[in-house]
Length: 85
Image (cartoon, rainbow, N blue to C red):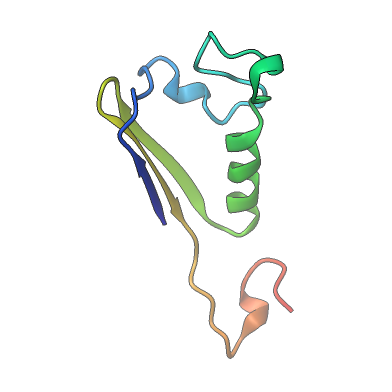
């Protein structure tokens, strides 16, 4: 799955920290005006729990792309995925 935006992008120095809990790349954002800095940390935890991976590409002025890779599920053998029953 890929989510693409055409926003302002993310500075290269912020990219390594985007999955850190409570990290906000936008210094102007404060908790009272929205966002706790947990969204991407939670997404990464969910993706990892399902045996997948997540990545972000971004350039200032060009927007960002978040890509999530999840393993395929074999419906005939549901026990082959983490947590499958």
